[in-house]
Image 1 (cartoon, rainbow, N blue to C red):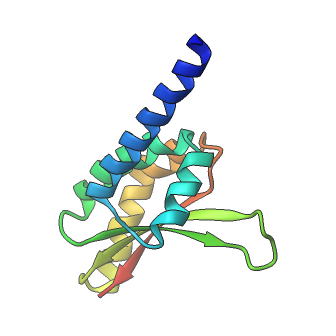
Image 2 (image 1 turned 180 degrees about the horizontal axis):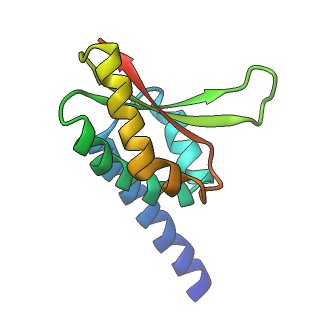
Length: 122
């Protein structure tokens, strides 16, 4: 009985974490994002922290999250975080490089989930 209760508590916590993330990110195809995070729960803490780190470099603009699938493989999936910006491309790339160097490359290197962060121009 305790094991069953622990599983339901885990599911509740997972759902709560994903709902909290939906306040920070705009999900494209939310069902795909939910399924990805449910199968890769280790990505949740990383993606949650990434939002604050992204805001240090890109304080404005919407941040999207979606799942991309490799058309040649039904299994290969990648979580893509897109930072929407109206900055000139050279400034946006410079800020993204600073974000990568200051935190993302180190933080994401230990994650088993395939996650990519890029800029998207408005």
